[in-house]
Image (cartoon, rainbow, N blue to C red):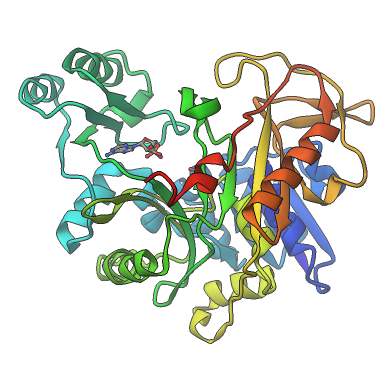
Length: 423
Ligand code: AMP
Ligand code: GLY
């Protein structure tokens, strides 16, 4: 079978490595992939957002199955285009990807169907938003409606900060069209849990839970990033919490999408906060998380392609999906200065013994050598019987990987290891 994976980060590398485990897979194209992915797939220099070129390529190569991994092409209708060519796909159509593409859509969906989330107001008029902030509880949370590379959420500790964020989004157009409409919502507190799920629109099967570490610095300091590391499972996601999430969040969400004529097929990502009033939805993503995928897929014991095809065919109810009860940890190695500015072009040395657990995100091949080309360069992921073991093994891998200006957090997994001991 010839597969095509759209995207080119650590998440896509993890998906590709897992898909390769299926013996029927003869060839995988990555669009665009990256210098590290090139060891596991044929990289084709087509941007993940160039839906026309992706469709042309898929038709020309007669690919048998496509996985569209990033949010932008999903929201742009890449799956709709490929399906129109008769190519089966993993990923939601545009009318379902809107669950991530518009925060106003997802907030209104949750309100209509009684799915627990932070209370909120939506605005398309800046003066109305500024006036509302005069009486809003502080801290408050300002969110751009549309996609903003994970940067469209501002937690404001004061009224002034909140108003400045609103002005930046709505007057200065910091996020372009994405910030023309905004959500102002209640600030929630509690541990965060990421739950990725497989769903064919009727059945929803949660994957093993995980914990992201979004801030750039140790002890959750510094700027928000795409994610500096992950562990799975997340100790805050107990059996009781999982049961409550299934009943009050997961099933109601897929039923709501179906009722709206927007059946969601693919990976639906639930970003949850476990508040004192129970689990609430912080955000939905219409795709696998990055770097959550790098700890979740290594724990998947079932064949990924088989599960994905069951999602596409609507037969997920009959498809066993098994996860190991081991633990995983992924430490992201970034370029010093990420997420603001950083240098590129440093040679990367990855010893062969750690290569199987390395997921490359931002690297290019130059004269046959792997060099840094992005903020997040790679993730080093390890699986072990215990969380302590997985964290230690991932950091041992990090110690062996060398490149110029490497930067990483030293405390990935520390919060999870403290869980239950302090809060
Ligand atoms: P998002 O881009 O939606 O993932 O949001 C980024 C981060 O902002 C989340 O991971 C949370 O840590 C935080 N956040 C988002 N919404 C809220 C909220 N209502 N209350 C507290 N923190 C939030
Ligand atoms: N790691 C968070 C995300 O993929 O959105």
